[in-house]
Image (cartoon, rainbow, N blue to C red; front, side):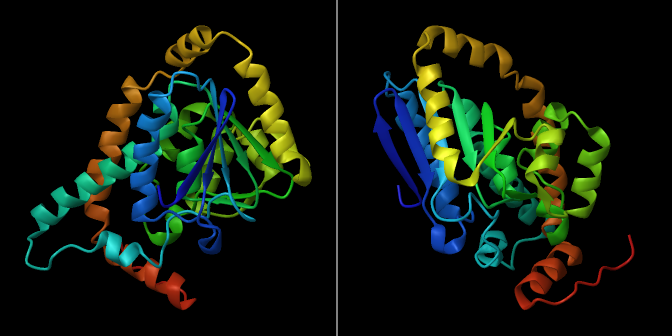
Length: 267
């Protein structure tokens, strides 16, 4: 795998996002690698816990917007319907990648430092347990590129959060929020000192790995109830398959890349 590094330490499998120079942003290759790693882990029967972290200063700064124009590009000769169908297929593919952590048989612990933005939040909401450092920064960023989060955040965090009003504020504004707000939202369950993240998550992983793997597998299957989630994600994919072609989205991405201010037409 080009964008992920996996290291097995006893019963623990440590998976690292390995694009530190790009702030661990999500590329097409990263989406493919996340799908592939599920099979690798699930076929290794002595992995009892998976830890996911990001190499470098940041966990994941969301979608790689420098690659985004190519990711969203479709042949000009296609009509609107065919473009929408292909966009739907792409979104479903991304959803499958971001659902990877919930499809792993073993419990998954995520350790978050620095930025966790946009798609990074989509990803961590499919994990079992989430720790972050004191200086971690979060954002449900999709609103700032003219779209709604479509690969897990609105669906999973909408069910998981303990503060519906704060959740709506963060999705409508896309503003950066800190570790304390993430804790009050229910996005993460423990804040640790900046230099103690790895120690804390490995200590937790070792405790879980000492338990019955059959019991852990059963618990994960019971608490991960995603049949209704699948239908919600499909509705989101069918909605956003049209949003890829709005002026809002192209204006927002262009403004981000040029450090300008987007202007949006009337609804």
